[in-house]
Each structure stands twice: as C-alpha cells, then as structure tokens.
Image 1 (cartoon, rainbow, N blue to C red):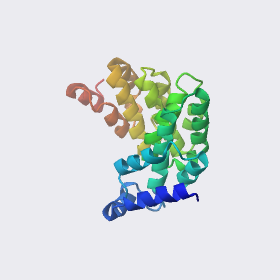
Image 2: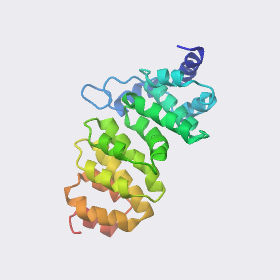
Image 3: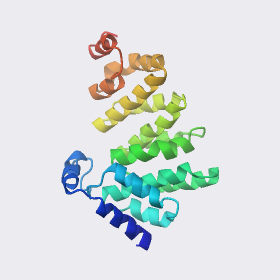
Length: 238
C-alpha cells in the first residue's frame, strides 16, 4: 500500500461516525443471502467522501485507485469511484477517456452495490459509449450478475439526458421482469427519467409493457404522472 492510499484511508477513518457504521450494514442489506452480504462499513457520509476524493483524484495513480476500489470497506471503494469519475470528467482526450472506461470495466467485480453503480456507471460508461456500439450493455443486461445488469441500465441515464432513448428502452424491456427489486427500481427510475423529457415516449412504452411489469417498476415509472392517469395504470384501465 502506498503512502497516498494509506493517507486516503486514514482520512476516511477520521470522518467515520459510529452511529452510521452501525446503521449502514442494515441499510445496504449485508446479512446472509442479502445483496450486500459481507460488506464492511466505516460510517462515512457521501459528502465527506466527495471532499476527500476531490483532494486526491488528480495525483493518484491508477494502480493506487485499483487498490482502493478493491478495498473491503464500502466507503473506500465508493470514494475511489468518485475520484475516478472526477478524473474521467477532466480527461483531455478520447484516448484518456478510453483508458479510464476500460479501467472501470476491469474493476466491475468491486462495483458491487447500488450506490457504487449509480454514482459511477452513467458518468463513465454512459458518457464514453454514448455514440458508440452498445453491444457491451446488452451483454451485461443478459448476464446473471445483478450489478452488471444495473450498470447496463443506469449507464443509459447519460443517453437519456441527451434525449437518446432507444437503447434505454430496449434495456428496460430486457430487464423489466428481473427477479430482484433493485432492478425493478432501476428500470422504473430510467423510464421516469425518459418521461421527464418526453412524456409520450414513456406512456407508449408503458402501454405495451405495464401489465407484465413488476409493481415496483411500474410505481417508480409513473410516480410523477397526473393522479388520474397514474391510477389508470395501477388499476389496469389503460
């Protein structure tokens, strides 16, 4: 472990709050058989992690970032991913962006909880692959790995924000009947984001799919609908 990685981890430990360290394991479902089984927490808030990430992202080597991303503690991994996003956003060339996107893909085994995915995937992979072939995302969506599937879905957030809905809708159709509610929430969230930009596109998609969608996905998708229309979807009257 380098001096810098030791300093970063020590900075995180200095910001640890005992009450949060006790609360996070249940919040992130770390019990036997749960999606975050075995994860460890220091008890550091995300704002504090962002401050620390901003302090070192310019100078840290990718080798040191790799070590941090593979750390057993959740906040160390998240802080490293936040730093990677900052580094990517400041990249001066497509070749540098590619290096960082490839680095991210190489470390997907440690992007292993919903907040880690949601903080990083759209900002790195979504951006890099916006106008490129997206077969990678369909491959991840078709895998049996919950976190890779969520990476595929949440990466589409970047494309949605650019007004490009085609792949987001296709991925939503692939993943809408996933067995895990974390994917139901991700699918519903992305559909809602589409609707925020083009209401009719979302409604047209839902008309074709809502009767076979899990209730959680549907509720997330129609959260901001006018109440009468929302009830029509919930009660199968559309």
